[in-house]
Image (cartoon, rainbow, N blue to C red; front, side, top):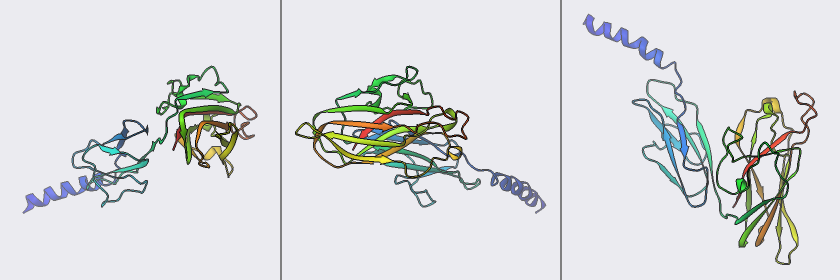
Length: 262
């Protein structure tokens, strides 16, 4: 009897100690964050006895949420949210990745304003290659502009009718990179004139001290649906860095890596 009691006494402190530790979030590994037809997403967490629970609608997973056991095949825009669970540890914080499906893909993209010579990417192709830029701003996927209003033209082989345009940008205020202040979209009508289709603009002050680095910041622009072969995008930068910023008075950087037509 004493033998079993000793074993129990040894196990209880170990179990209590384990339950004091948070699990790390699982890894979410998509083939491509931007896609035309479908994208495959893999989730991973290496611990015996652990399970990954996930959702695809952006909601927080719970114990009753699906358990990951095979790669996910997505055919629509989704927000994958996943947690790691184990009976002996505290459940992880959620990991989240937003997946964006393109409805239309331009044949040609032209930059009407050129990026800074340090961050030229692949020119206009960087905005229409379905490639997400990473934390390396020199990876060839980002275009960097400093103080300039960005203008780009997108040409399709035949008229398309879009309802929304998603502009992928980033925020890293400590590195002087701020999100845009406004985005305007224009479409060329059948008569050859340009029509303003819609805009997005910031509705609240940007408190840069409270902003974490975010390399996946998406601005959605709802637009009037008209058949058009040519679209023009105008992205107005934040402007000058605020007075309480270390670079106060200098123009903020603006980075773009993709424009998605839906």
